[in-house]
Image (cartoon, rainbow, N blue to C red; front, side, top):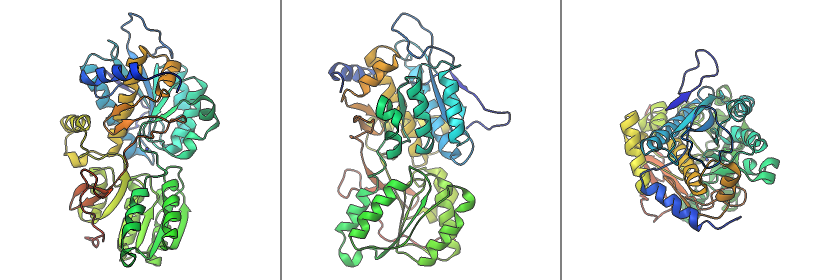
Length: 436
């Protein structure tokens, strides 16, 4: 059962404390029983529920961007959480208890996300917590979770700043199930490094939205590419507001770089740059964005299937990922929401993985005691998710995460890097011209 609460009338709904051997076996049992992910809820309950015979629902609280700048991602995350709840409850819930989910709308605002989690942990007394979308919102939200002693499992808060907060340094309560973002573009840079010198791009531009998710991978890529001799012709940070996108996009086009590495968090950012490039009759030879092109049909419907050709994006998951649990989730998503596999964006898998990891922790510890869950998740155990293996380091980053680069090719989202990895196809080294 799902309860999605809206913040105001008219709001549209829409990245070693003990041994893990015993808990790993418990987690495997959960997956074997058909529960691909775990944890989502509604209705008040205590933050630390002792193991007993109570059949009261397990409640999980989350704040998501149903409106505002991150609405497309927030709505995709909501679908992932909801799909996970449906699967869990169809298999008897967790520990014999149904799960319910409360979603509050943070309107893509750092201030509102703090208010939301204070409500969830205070008046609503949720048992467990799932994270919001974006590092920008995860950082303040995780500090609220730390004050309430909550394990904060999330899938889209991979910026270094999230793990470096005083609260996480002290309480170690943040757990990101997805690929850490700082190294996301390393496979792409490594590919360029292996190209013959005459085939490498000579010039590059690095426009970056002012966001803790968008900037670190681009900045590292810039440093590495400069060492390879790629000349920087533009590098600047711009406000993460739609009205602020056209000016830097026009400046990039005016410099005519062969490579554009865009620090983006969503589809609107990438779409705005592509539209400006087309208006300026400028097509970069190579174009990679930190986020946005990974959002399946939401991306291609915004920019056009032809224009998407050649655009690359790093990530730890895609709809064709050779993982049995992932394939089952994609089938269930299509049955629930329609469309095709290529239209399932990575946000869905990130959200679904949050539930899976929390489910394994709840099963292993025998309840919703958040202190026990935090200890378990720091026990060096390797967990399973639709994104692949999950193993947290001391600060909660997933050091076992898979790392890939994907590219749109003739309307299909293809894994292209690392070269030679299972599932990788030949990369399209030159982006086709805009289709108009």
